[in-house]
Image (cartoon, rainbow, N blue to C red; front, side):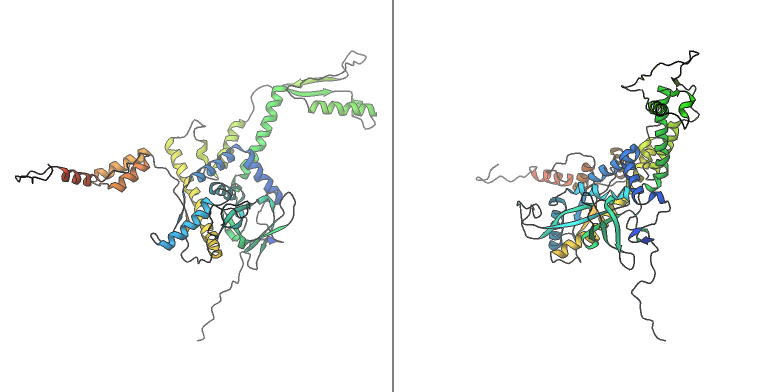
Length: 452
């Protein structure tokens, strides 16, 4: 029986709907293109709940300890490569690493972020900003990872298998088309479903709640204003509304319409109107304010709170509302916050995966190095151990008969922010040293020239 030849190529496709380089995978037409971009800008800039969540994410990410680890510890060549990448990433880029991470995290509300990797020759300090470096070894490093804004996207360029090969943008202020190849870029995204280059915005699930909440807030503001100022009503003779009204009558009607729609309780409030009465002594024109009585049928505060909770629940950040209501406990908030940190740690780990897969190997190749033993970026832990938890843990270990050496004691002190004495030694060693210093009883007389 003849063996079938192995096929290395692809046969099927992802099924991602792409038309002229534009991804059309959103079922709601009003959440595509410029409409969706406007909604994201509005949600991230104007909604207090979403803004607070994104602010929290950025501040936590800025405090994380990022490390470049060598391929193998205590290997001189691997340590040297790790030092080189560490210099390029943390010490020699035009933008600080914390600011770069903050830009990368724009992928959360947008679903993706795209960076053009810009290189430089490490030739020391000079007037040439494109080559300015703290190091002068002549090697190639990163000048910056330049963000290419999501709003500037025009279309994507794909290969025959729906994999992105370039981002095409028409950015402000010149609106010239620019094609940025994937080989010179870093592409971060929250989801890789169907290889969609636009990922999935973490705010997509919050959109419906945000839409209703923002509309209710607008209606609530208008209602409060009308309740305080009254509902303005202007009356005038019926002939002013007829189609054959004179030009003067139409002008007066337009003036009154404009007047009644612009009445506000502010520093410029007040109306000046002429007095005119008919033959029976009634006012021809009148302006009155109708007031409403009684409570509203709906509690808008409760409705807005409900939508706030749903928005934050969609990103596991509803713990931000604990303490603003009469319900909720510390244990519940701690559990929810830890779950949020685990989700955030996953996002940060995905950043490391992209950097380790593309950024570091490309830079090594430009310097004539292979990536077989490439160093890697690692994100530190996010959870802080409380003194209560640490004390309980140590208490359990001590009762179980566990002892701690000098390094372990220093580690535990560091977790508790207790200063560690650099000259401290192991208690056993101190005892041994003290024993050696104690005088030893002896019946022998010291030599004449020996010091007592």
